[in-house]
Image 1 (spheres, one colour):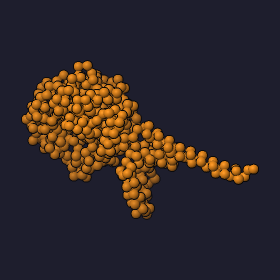
Image 2: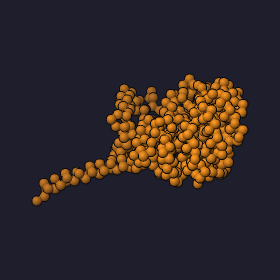
Image 3: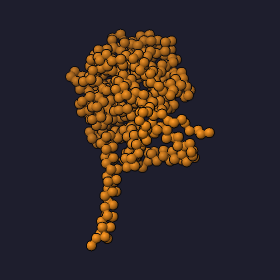
Image 4: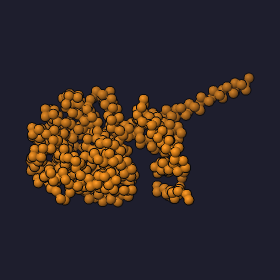
Length: 344
Length: 125
């Protein structure tokens, strides 16, 4: 299995190292300029509707494109006081959705408790899932718990064939993912009666995803025909020039070409719907970020507002300026990209 | 005064100029310089051709990929390889599309063998 950038001591293991590399790439315009032409600069939240908590960097996979640089050799996990502060803020703020991500969030020892407490508090809970962690010993009870609490599952599956999926996510991942999806279907997920099972596809390479609705029609047809698997929605997400995908671009000598492609595909409609306008992202250590990508680049939220979930103030956070950098063109290219797929 | 841009630089290999440069695909719209009316019509028609219709946009992309190989257009091969992947096609499908183009090209040559037979029959005893 591929060691993480952190384990290898790569210069791209830190946010500063990645931002420094991205800043070296010549682009025809900055993201701030692009937003300016769309009357969106400075970028501000519309309304915070999603509290996204990243439980840490532990994962049983080391996917080639992972923006978190997650993997089995990572040890960062959200401590108890941050979990308590996050759940307290969720309830206190009335933010309707808790989006749980990682790493593989299931590997956090308190994952089950977080799900139960958030669901019992009335939040809509979303779980970002790699499909294979729940097949590990000691984690197979989790899908039933998710079904019982009506948790929405957002599962990564780049393609409906093994070669493409395993190239991105590791040998054997596709076969395990299919087994996991079959179990979720057997629990009632993806069958249109409220237990939402959404799949996420990231391009296996440096191309941009096509129109999401057309991709979804094909994925549904192929997953049903080949495996008898059903699901609700397909989200197509652009690969971000961040962390391990940035390393992949660097190895290929394609960083400038890829960033140029993203800049050229800037879509003002996608820019107005970017997820950072509705999301607040919490790092494992409690620091606040505008999105999971900014979190990995260690870009803090606006210095004028609360910096941690322990002292978060919703009204103040909804007035903040959102921090941007060249990687943000990944969310505004073509039909746009977000944790919920395309946005335009 | 000419409004032509300075001679384009090709950063990929400036020491070894050659006829086709992938960066030139991005300059396609410059074809409007000589007649913007015709190019406007072309690009509008082009866009309409590739829109979702009785054929899906993905199917049209595969057809374009095959035709790109038949007409051996390097720009079109680059563009529709990327477009086909983005629209969810896989390497198996794209390879079959290219074989269709190759089969038609090969068949087009071979079927002319009947012309050869017609002529040799006419010339022979």
